Length: 340
Image 1: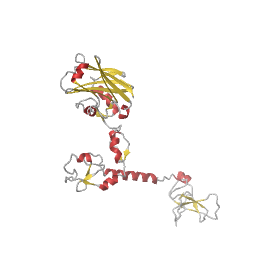
Image 2: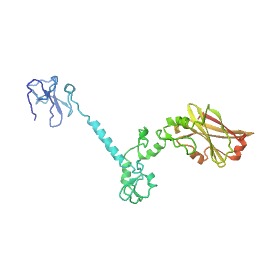
Image 3: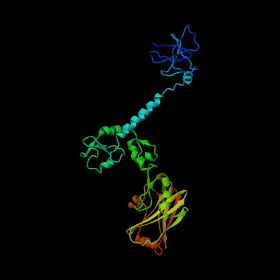
Image 4: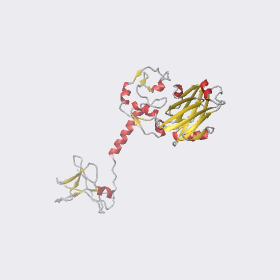
């Protein structure tokens, strides 16, 4: 059933009508019909709007439900919405709402399996759980109750990288999230200088600028084969000697650290782990008929050097050995960097 109204000024707006199956019916331009009916509504539309006629004849063309012919849509300037885009947008919003349920109320990172809850059902991430004695939401006791339902849901969704605000666009299943974040290129880098006095952190691209501005006393030598001279090695207490080496388009930091009567010499790259794996460095002490060498892959400033020193994964020698290779209290270390 449809309503028709004549327009006195001769202009009319013509709309398609739908049959009971939901298909818009348009006439077959090549067919002849004994009579046609034009359906129009007076909406003061432009005179160039084309009319669409319908007939009670089986010889008709079917268009998808809710669509108009391209000519009619253009002349009448009618815009139709994209249901696929709306569906995708709604799905994305629903997924984000679901991910937000895993947000830890303490650090605002995501609680990943195994997920523990308090007696009231409030969750907290495993890192924060170790530091808490009560639920941060309801102040109730924290037990060892597993939230198996949330864990099953976590298996079905992806989580954004914690460094998303720094520019990382990765979305990962929870089993891969921590591994990715550990080596994410958008992770903030700490100042690579030894010691805990400098608290700077920032992007990898800004590390060298920070060193030039905040640590101007560090000397930089050019070339893949240099001599690192540590002066006054007999100084008491914990002492660090630092020098920069520039070669192959990269910057390397050479560190000699003294702890009590132990010396640790190591090289780290001002770059990512992947970049560091492309190089090999060699440290060599030379004395009167003596030679002490160490060869390894440089550490990335992403990892730092403290763990390597703790594990003695570097050139290690004691005070007596240092004196054997020193001259007038100064120790010269030959440093060679090559592409591995």
